[in-house]
Image 1 (cartoon, rainbow, N blue to C red):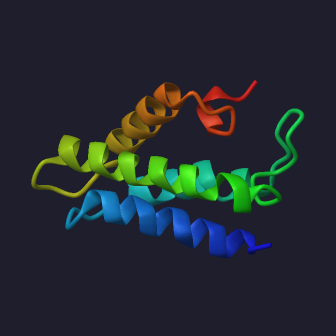
Image 2 (cartoon, helix red, strand yellow):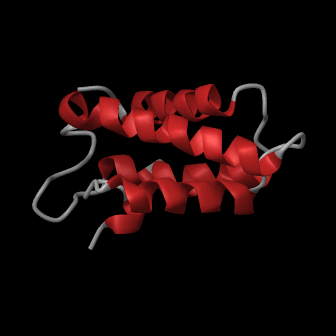
Length: 107
């Protein structure tokens, strides 16, 4: 099973892939850390932790991370991605994903 740090690095890399050459400002990076790092090892209702199921769900989660990067970069235009832009992208992609694993749709 990959470590929490390894999974988080994969997620950040995927966001960066989606964002292309657009960088994250410090607020956006902090938002992602606050949103994602603890989520990796937090038990989900009836499912265990994302870390426990990463071998099954990891590919889908990384696809969503790339989509978050694409949307955030499009919102940022030529500047760095801000916390509000990454938050909007996270909530939009997660809310439309249909996945019970995404932080914004957990109950």
